[in-house]
Image (cartoon, rainbow, N blue to C red):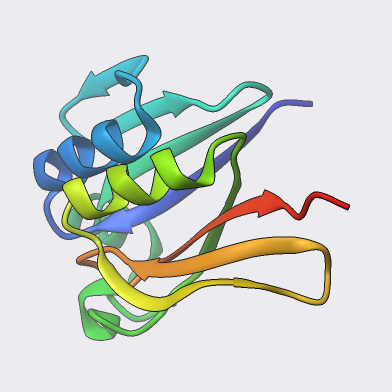
Length: 127
């Protein structure tokens, strides 16, 4: 089994550029309608809201109706949290909660992308 997580985005090019900076890697696929980043064992896809709307509406609401509403959390466990935080700011992600030690053993900072997806950048707390 291969896993791919797909985020519905308003502007594919804007999101591609943002995630390219945040993830510090180029997409492995970038065509109209889908951008994919290989995360090592998983892929992150970016699909325009209008593209998925053709498939899922009318049984489900058009994704544009939920713009800015937190839709999911992308939890990225990184080796270098400070570098990841710098890339998040460079990518112009909106800060939500500063880095803090959490009771599950990670130091985590929360951001939001322009579409309302929550991005958690985390690193294991050293014992």
